[in-house]
Image 1: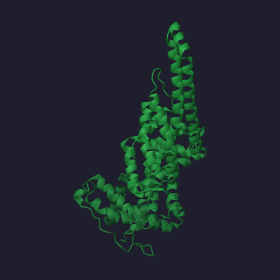
Image 2 (image 1 turned 30 degrees about the vertical axis):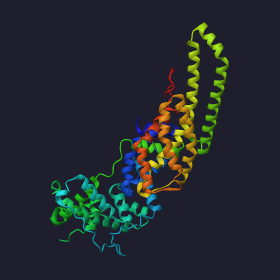
Image 3 (image 1 turned 90 degrees about the vertical axis):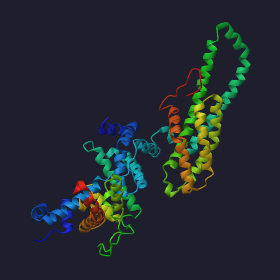
Image 4 (image 1 turned 90 degrees about the horizontal axis):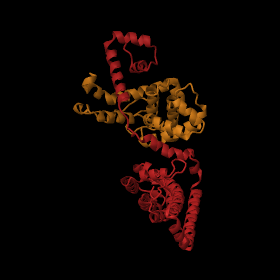
Length: 193
Length: 262
């Protein structure tokens, strides 16, 4: 059954049809939620909330749209709500040395990996996760929205309640931090040289 | 030649700039081109890095939790207390029926024996099968509700993050309400030869008892221990399987003509 057919039946009260949509899209929604929250437990909660909202708003879904994209957007909004409710937009990691002007004044603790160990994808993954964890709440949210979700800078500014320029610089700071953490990996990985 | 700043390079990467100007510069400036390439590689690494994965059954687990919140299953819309009350009422009816049947059988035994001798034993056996089937239906119905309720408690435990511990005041109270019913159903199932149900209920009972005594919260260790027990016995899976088989609307229970097993 296609997504559209399942949506149509779910609108008519067919629980099994909606169940099919949940089973089909749960893992993708989890991926979005995890990128946004950076926490598996939170991501699981976001997945629940996303489908809960989707079910309640399924009457508003337009058949011309793509259900996956629609769901994706709900997941982003649920993640933002969760982060907002916990004040994590403003959370800064202990290693985050932003001063009042928002400029980075302190370097991260050195976690430079040994080049010969970096070929292992699991280690790469851990380094990327660690690099993302070093971002402040605002930086992570702005970066994920721009990089993974393709949200325009103007919209990111509105979402975070900051000016467009500030949003742009928040994204830049995130990329700068990621680059500082991950550039040694890029240089040392043979296939990337 | 003035180089592009890092901000400009990042803006160009995300197409948030006048791309023609930056493109032109990058074509002629190897230093900026190298910087730009590095940024691209780093960001590609972030894009490609796999996140934590969820298993094939993740959607099923999401649905299991979600359906309660959605109140999709009409039978499950009943409140907790109502569910327990209905189950208790059915259990009483079940035992009353058994008592009534035993009394009646004692009264009609001589007549039935004569009748069976005269007409063959098939009708008597058929009547016994029908009675057995009815008893099973009643038992399955009450146990189905009981297992639904138990599954909800187990799900809360199984999905909790051991690192955080768990506030379980509500679950503990529910578990306490379920223990007594669980004991009655287990004894009845065993007596009727429903070994699968009896076995699952026997596995379930110690977990419910422990939970009912846990108070308002579980420590990390206590939660981890309970989760291990649930997982080691495959308890959640067994409860779901038996629960699904005892749900009249979802799947009619198979009632054998000559045994009481599911």
